[in-house]
Image 1 (cartoon, helix red, strand yellow):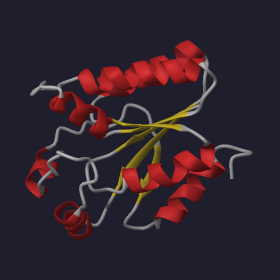
Image 2 (cartoon, one colour; image 1 turned 180 degrees about the vertical axis):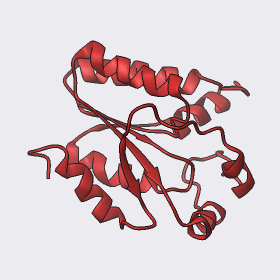
Image 3 (cartoon, one colour; image 1 turned 120 degrees about the vertical axis):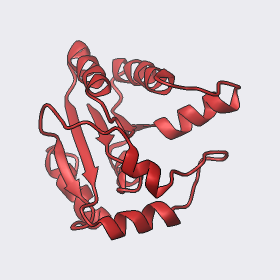
Image 4 (cartoon, one colour; image 1 turned 120 degrees about the horizontal axis):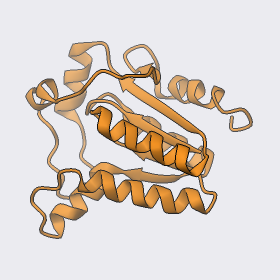
Length: 166
């Protein structure tokens, strides 16, 4: 099983993903951590590299029969198609989750007050979130609005999609 979280910074992806990964016994892959590791290694422009590494790690873990949870912005169709192709190629289930925060004031508050837990990672500014290239989805993911749902309610909606995991 491959679960891919998507959404702009500050929507609550990581909060939900971190609660879900241990419940599923899933390998947790966070693009922010991978990209910061690349920067720490001297690569100033990480570009697609973080996603490519995450895909490779996901493939290795899925091939072992592990569940994998990817925590990423996943903003463009190209990255979404890469996760879809990985799941299809390995014949594993895929759950795509888009996390949004429909309350702009709450979303801004989260972005501006967020605690950065990846050493060296610069948090996004509200302006950078507003300017982020985030493309519409070609297919409808499971959409969770964290302005309307608590993290636990969001978690329950996800678990309801996977019988036997609640």
